Length: 251
Image (cartoon, rainbow, N blue to C red):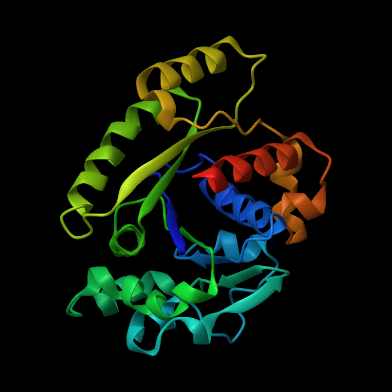
């Protein structure tokens, strides 16, 4: 059965898109059939996989406008076991177009149903805000993975995200937070170590054992249009995402 996971955090700059991209690639490397869905008008996931968001192509914009068609028409093949539904930089206007649509919160869920048998994982990357795109991502998913920067402000913002998940559960009762992944970790920094310790003390087993280090190669990889596993498979970031994929795959 497909696992549909939304990578969510209402605070930007926490490596949410980086985690969606590289976790997806690492799961594909484990032989899982993976679909990445870019629901962010910034289209960073699309760009990070070497796809031009300005090109004439079907995107999540068309998927949301025509959910009855299913999302298959917008799928692009990226690599072995890895596909993408790209975003377009023009998506910001789509929220206005969709505002009056009946059932607008469930459009992505409806569109993805025909693809359930084709994939083991569908990972959705929404914007770092609570708008219609993020709401669609949460309603479509069964699991929320929270990338959490080991910074005190990011930790404080997590309470708001938990409240959001509880609200969305009224529309999607099966939704649950399946894990928290600590990102941008520098264990040479005392504050980083202290915040990570506080996160683990507060959330216990909900926090993945694997942490994503502060790693310059992770920042460089999107410019090449490839996942870190392709850009530099021996670096600390690539090894961390491979380990995270193993944890996620164990359920």
